Image 1 (cartoon, one colour):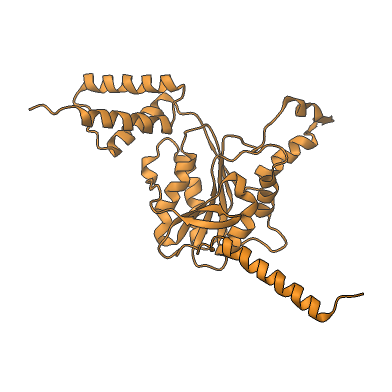
Image 2 (tube, helix red, strand yellow; image 1 turned 60 degrees about the vertical axis):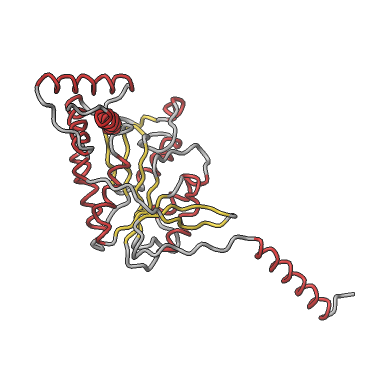
Length: 300
């Protein structure tokens, strides 16, 4: 015997009551930042809901503080200026050696162009599946948004890999005109590469055709319109970065040749202990040296 209308009404009423009780247990939705006042935010999850968490004090880096990467600075600055001006601009992939200024360069763009409407949204790799939701949140706003994915690498089969490909290429809905993606990675192709994949390579006459596995890995990085590569610092570049950061932290120039030589030797030993010469290592040395100098008692 089919249920009567009254039975259906009672069932619907009970279902609505249950839903109301469940909604009462869920945290209230977090309002989006006021982008007229806020310049940076992080995408976060709470109770299964995504929201934009305001960054109260974004890491402000001056472009002039970054040394030995002049070509890289010019490339990303030009692309960002185009974007802020409402002109065509590319998604950007910054790849190369660790500590050479990839992330700092993106942060420097925010510091330079925030007053002209540039905004930064940082997204963890695990939340890349939410990229369409993030783009929808900011679509139509007057500000320009860089979605920033730092230290981006994937393992085969990760869900975020497909989501990023779709976002870079545009889905059936098309890409938001006020959103670009800036990503950093130590891997050029974002995925691990294995020796066995080279066995798939075919030779057709004088031409070399990579196998399907290699093509798949190359296809993601090729969706970024602009590639910017970073390389290990030469010794002179490293010492120039040390000098720049020491000045940034208020350390006075060396009083004479002996003090300058001692400071250089100390900076090189610091890099040797870490097995790397880079802008990050220079910054860490400068912080340590500036702090140690400030603790020394002043001569009467």
